[in-house]
Length: 344
Ligand code: PMP
Image (cartoon, rainbow, N blue to C red):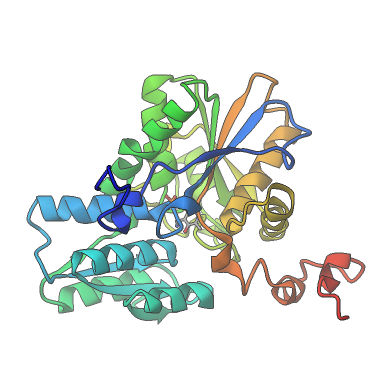
């Protein structure tokens, strides 16, 4: 970066150092101070910019990745967008295997960033040959000079947040943070941030947000994989039907489960109360905060940092579509939100 002119060499230099923004309304009835780490301020509009850059630069540094190589990944969208962005700027090819559950907006955005996209069925088991894990693995084997990021099983995913998100939160709160609340998908965000924060102060309480239909909370409680926990759900990027090694379960104190419907309403509420247009899992995180507050988790001395992982624009055809909300049965017929468009 040319500091005199305030000009960046490329968008990658803007990754990280996202703002911590005080929530003034949605949490006003709860004891404590609530601060959102708004990851949509990354150039690729999500926290996944951090891991894409870190993992790719580590692969370059160790010589695994060479100029013109291909980067392959499984992704619900955000990681893919970030990898596509880094690939374009650094000159790599990018192939992504995406779940059919991902919103059409996300898939179009990946194509717009020059990635080759394979859409794979969402409701098959991870070891099914059609799952996006299997497809990515196969593409990696078939493509010469390719690197598979494998975010669910890559320790560098945790390291990316240990090296950036954790130190940022610590310094932005001047070390006064008492709680970290973060959604857990690969688990990289919560694990890396928690590891760093707990090294500074082991008293900080770390709470993960999980989905109904995911095995993560149960695994945390029992350390056993319980397949009966698994069923389809709508929130993207949160919860899992397998146990990712990118989750450090020992760094997390507890998990809270949130419903698709309540998380969706909470996401819409963040926009209309705080003026922050953030994604579905930001709603899930706030929904978790509401449940925790109702259980008496916070006191007036609590300083709670909540990770908002991505931008609302990725959900225009889902959470921010009245039709989609209505089709899911998330609006009841009496609900005036269902007639939000006023014809004049
Ligand atoms: N929210 C969204 C929208 C995501 O895409 C992801 C990543 N799958 C997460 C939350 C969870 O982040 P992590 O994978 O670091 O646990």
